[in-house]
Amino acid sequence: MKISIFGLGYVGCVGMGCLAAKGHEVIGVDVSEEKIRLINDGLPTIVERDIDVLISEARSKELISATKDYVEAVHSTDITFLCVGTPSSSNGHLNLDYIFQTAREIGEALREKEGFHVVVIRSTVFPGTNEKVTEMIEELSGKRRNVDFAVVSNPEFLREGTAVKDYQNPPLTVLGSDSDEAIDILKTLYESNGAPIEVVSIGVAEMIKYVNNSYHALKVVFGNEVGRICKELNIDSHEVMRLFCMDKQLNISPYYFMPGFAYGGSCLPKDLKGLKTLAHDLYLETPVLNAIDDSNQEHLMSAIKKIESFGLRKIGILGLSFKAGTDDMRNSPVVSVIEHLHGRGYEIRIFDRNVLLSRLIGKNKSVIAQKLPHLNTMLQDRIENVTDWADVLVISNRDDAFRTLSTKSGQKVFDLARIKELECLSDYEGLCW
Image (cartoon, helix red, strand yellow):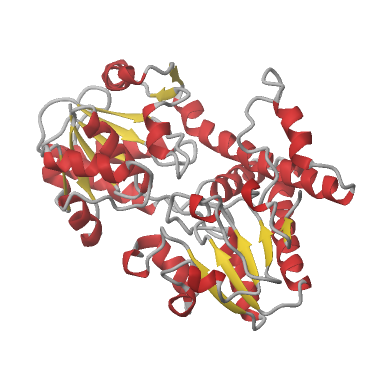
């Protein structure tokens, strides 16, 4: 199939690589000249396991390209995926400007296009967005919904760090549309993934991602609260949760339940806030949902207090992104830790092999400009520049590079991620184990 993808960030870049790996021809559309250049040079726009190989191979086979010309992209394809950002405001409402701008561009492009065109919303959006996008395209194009074009809600379920694997092996595929023709086209597109395809109402398709991510956020907080209680009682929290997670019938998935550091990233905070905002707008009380972020912030502050309690000023941070195997620093909890400690006069050095100042673009660049404007003086290109210098080493994620860590005499290791190979070190402490 011939496919266009609007937005070449995490969701769009992974989608482009995985669709091309299936033999589809994919055109990426983005406003960023840098992202367009990277794709056309056969390079990914993100750091993500296996995506570099997929993009390089697809480009060498001339299956992918990128452009700013949205009209040509729509005219040259039969399916358009919307993968643009939907950042949240301070009060939890989504900024859908990028979605609606893209809808206007698609509507304009469809005005002169013949044939049936499918528009697929992959971005996380509030219920009702599919209808609004459909209305905008219909008005601007002069075309008839479900006759000349159709809009499908198809939420993604990707975890950064394992996004390629998740795309290729999804737990299920959710499709919501009032067009049977569009649904049949997407069923054909996705059938080779081998996962169940659930055709649901548009509202259900728009809602499921918020419910999923709010529950994932709840699981992280639950596991961390258990961890703090167990630590005070000198009980192995991971052993407790190992038993808890053996119940696959009721307790479902073990992925988010292991006690560790605060949750972060682009999805859990935004979608939790979005679901709380939906409830607020409906005049509903949701005390558990409202408590999740407070608990997460308390967990983050407990890590900061522990670091301060060591009474040492030279702090080495190993891991800057919110998860190993990615360069994503959006809502990375360790960024808040660094910001706090730096403001209190601590000396900070950081190592993360996936974070390069020269590659910072988009939201990652703006996050660092706002929270860590002095990152260039903190970030080191060799791990030894941190480990040989610091009095306290703070491990924030499970990068394989940290498993064989060597420490100097008297150096404290404070582990936020639980790397078991480090527990034998003489001055090691875990966050909640």
